Image (cartoon, one colour):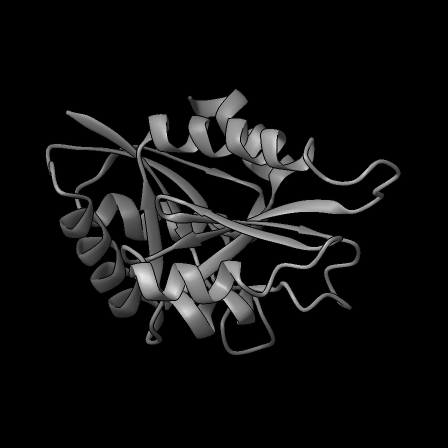
Length: 179
């Protein structure tokens, strides 16, 4: 059996994309995953499965969520090891920001493996006080204000494809809770 952490994209936005924690657990268990748990109501889901392929886990979850909700729910799947490394990397990158930097650290978790060209294009958007660095399937964003920054999940998706964004503090909570 293998453990994975799935991050759901674009749920609980507006009136038509509702997917509460209880419904997520029910749909996930209905797809034959065990050890299902959620963290806050933004689509962070731990699963245990016999499936060994991240892509297969993602595909089964996406099909289950589409069947349950009637709308597509893209999913980024990471192993506990990848998630722990993402938190370590996020802290290391935040520590490289200029003295007096008062921004925040975010991570965009990618559904699919990024291309080298996309990685280069996203990282080229960095400035002296906003940074984008890709490590594996995680794009780390160091920004002053998420709503006013050029470094957002929209920028990540433009270069790297479907992803979902979490504050580094949320990833820390998930790691503490499940990894």
